Length: 306
Image 1 (cartoon, one colour):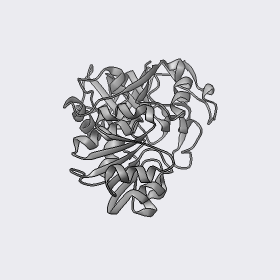
Image 2 (cartoon, rainbow, N blue to C red; image 1 turned 180 degrees about the vertical axis):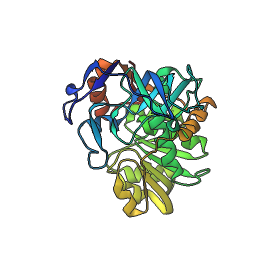
Image 3 (cartoon, helix red, strand yellow; image 1 turned 45 degrees about the horizontal axis):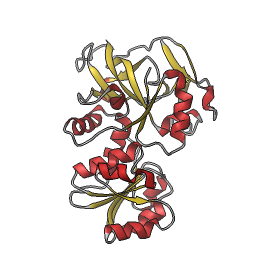
Image 4 (spheres, one colour; image 1 turned 90 degrees about the vertical axis):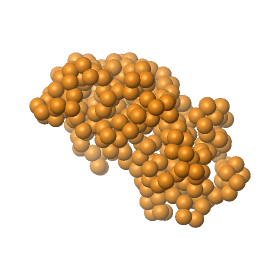
């Protein structure tokens, strides 16, 4: 099969090339998925540079990618949960970095797999699992937000856009930070937009009418502002800043659970969650996709389509 691969840690995305590699082996309790689409997440290109080497073992050559939407074409021993031809999605992170989803096929443990939302295109479905699951898990760290006000840092990004919609589905009032060019987009999602940058604290407090019940951070380096706008007893969580744990917050690292992905999929099929696709790229365009993601200015999801 064809796959995008890199042979060593590198800061040059152009070192990622497409080549023919062996088809994946399919262990027991796993399925072989023919990849129709695979979302790009910031963690994918950070891994290329070895940023998680202290905590994740790596087996080179590496095929990047942790999101997948596709069709089951093979079954490992004892996998009654799925059948050949099933349309599925998964957050396909494994314990060893190696065989990822930017390929024509990928083997995934069944505990990470769930049915594809019927209402989504392949491209939309491919961009859902990691970002949607991250948004859900981060918001759940705040506790019950029904009737409360939640601030979303980075609200127009791939994860932030999901967080706005899920928070609204949970009954929260949502204020979201974004550049002014994305304010109308945030309004369509149900958020009250506020421009980030100098004076953010004052703008948030003015819009909210006082301190905030909960804050979720998908940007990083926002802790000072978070603590300045958070009310006493309020809750906060971040996917980008581990230091929040030292200040009463939760640092979130989403887990590859199909049950969690299924909950996000249910929100999609109930009409409470949509997936914005920013752009699609082929396997041979993974370096360009990573460069676009690394700018930090993409609205919605970038998706690889083998």
